Length: 272
Image (cartoon, rainbow, N blue to C red; front, side, top):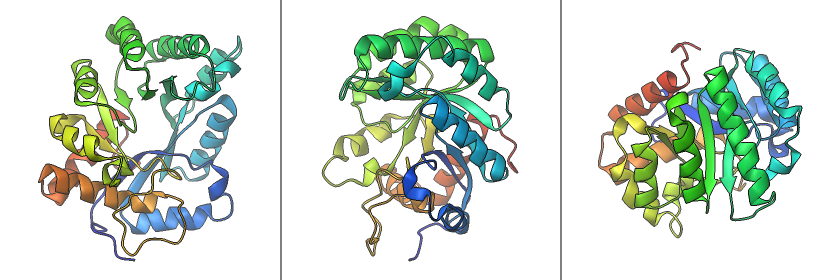
């Protein structure tokens, strides 16, 4: 399989490498990512337990991996009096480069909207206290999401709305709050990605970052098509390729921009 841009440096800002689909071959997954030009990956924490596992992975592969620590809106019902302290303890480790994945998801409501709002606000307060970047999730909850960010924005540092799939109006509201935008393989989805392909032109270059959200959202522009539906960080070049095509931008120049954005966002040294 030939990658479109294997000679350039890439940074995957979000991959769920603690997912059970990576249990059997994670070392090979990481090797393929490195050979594809992926120099750094942020492993996503979605609950206290998953965040602890993400940290363990980042400590095992310190040059290639960092991680986030947080509670996803799907798991908001698990938030309790001990959750904030658990995240504080995780955030003491240098490998934890952001809080999250947190936010709101009123599409599936695995946790009630009330639970989600309380869990999200608590993590915004933690990010303000700990001076950590935020890795955010939003689906079908734009107004409430923006209102909470607005309430705390002056106290917060870097924010990325990851896996963005909203409208032009929604992306503009995020940009107006000085948020970065994470683009996934959704942009290469023939059926669902058209709106995203239209709106990326509205995102300032200095606010763009890319991610796989592996094992989900495998890009559809991979040829020949892999036998497995599993996405992995080695496929990040295809996200970049489609983004470059849609924006009519030189792929090498774009790769340098999104790589630099990511390094600066997470406050990492280029060699880390």
